[in-house]
Each structure stands twice: as structure tokens, then as C-alpha cells.
Image (cartoon, rainbow, N blue to C red; front, side):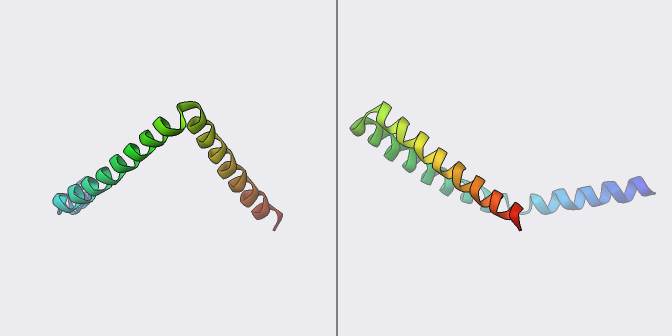
Length: 79
């Protein structure tokens, strides 16, 4: 009986997840379009400013972001 309830719950959860795949597909399609546009813009910047300069800028931005996250985490530990 316990197995039956677990399977029934799993089935209900899966059914709910698959109720509206069209909406999920539409959302993912929009997200994909936005990411493709970002990629085109980044490719243009790499072409204009040069691969090395863009790679260096991305590296600096990531390092700054990581430093900010570390600073925020360290501040949280002090409390």
C-alpha cells in the first residue's frame, strides 16, 4: 500500500510538471532568443575591440564580481 501511494504521488507530480509544456517551450524559446542576441553583441565587441582585450575585460569583471561576493560573505560571517 505504501508503494502505491508513493507511485501515485510521483505520478501526480509528473503530471503537474507536464501540464503546460507549451508555456515552458515558449519561455525557453524567448530565453534562447535573448541569449542569441547577447552572443551576437559579444561577438561584435570581440571583433571591434579584439579578442584579447575582450577576454581581459571579462576576466576583470569576473574577478571583481567574485571579490564582491567574497566581501559580502565575509561581512556575513562577522555578525
